[in-house]
Image 1 (tube, rainbow, N blue to C red):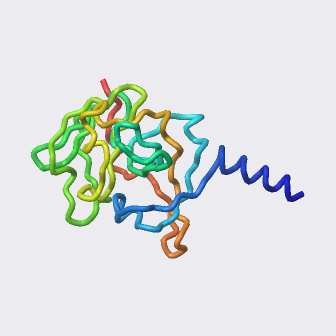
Image 2 (tube, rainbow, N blue to C red):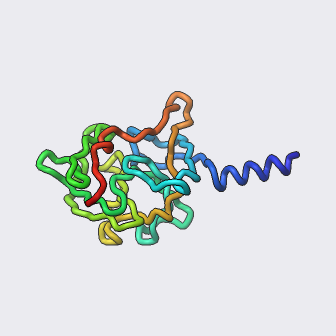
Image 3 (cartoon, one colour):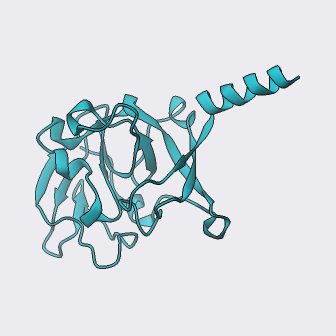
Length: 183
């Protein structure tokens, strides 16, 4: 019986869901250091990642991360999207639609440095919610426009599970609903 339970636990952790601790402040205030999130590892077998979702991924080699280091960021653009910083009101735009990013860390701006990226097919443009403390796609624009191949995504973070006082679902912000598909 113990062996069966162990096998089931291994299969679930490998293919279905896994917990991850947040090691840095790059996603504050959405996720705090030492928060624990539950990640759905199977969702992207059935559909593509979407704008606004928070994902755990293995960073590309060009990002100079440790070999076993996972990152967690918000998807801003998917394959074919045109992501620009910034419009005349200093907002990110995706396919010509400005994002109202009410989830940003208080006092942060969408980006200090301007950029203009068309996300390659099969890739994602990702950013932390605490932009002034996040080494995200903007910090790696020289390597494949800072994008992350979809096949490096571990899964979608869908709930903060620890500490219990921070238990909540990680839904897609409404601002992403207005973004049209790329032309």
